[in-house]
Image 1 (tube, rainbow, N blue to C red):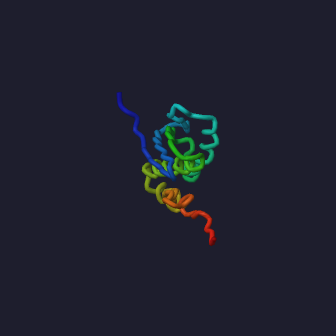
Image 2 (cartoon, rainbow, N blue to C red):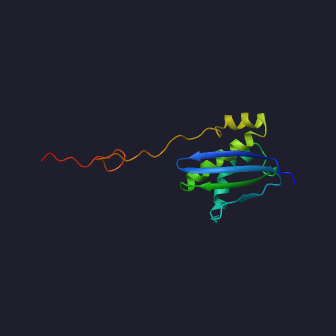
Image 3 (cartoon, rainbow, N blue to C red):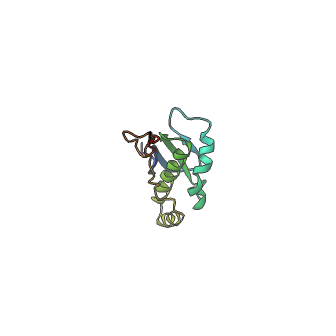
Length: 129
C-alpha cells in the first residue's frame, strides 16, 4: 500500500507547538489529538486565513496536533504551521504568504522570574525607613 503524499509544517508561538499535515483532498480538517474539544471550531476559523489567501480552502485535507500554550498562541502556532505546509506545495504560494507576513514566527516568549524579584522585573516595594 502506497502512503498518501503530504506536506508537513511545524509552527510555534510562546509555549504552543502545532504540527500540520496537508493532503490533496476536499477540505476536511481533523484534529488527531485525543483531547479534541468543541473550541476547535473557533480555532479553525482563525487559522484558515492562509488557505483563504491563496484560495485553496477545498483543495487540501488537513490533520493537525496542537500542544501547550493558551488558546490564542495555539491558534497562531497552527496558522504558522499551516502556512509553512502550504508554502511547500508551490513557489508562487510562498511569495504570496511571505508578502502577507504569514511565514514569520513571532519570537516573543515569557521572560523568566529572577531571584529577589516578584516576577520577571517587578521589585518589592522600597521603604526608606
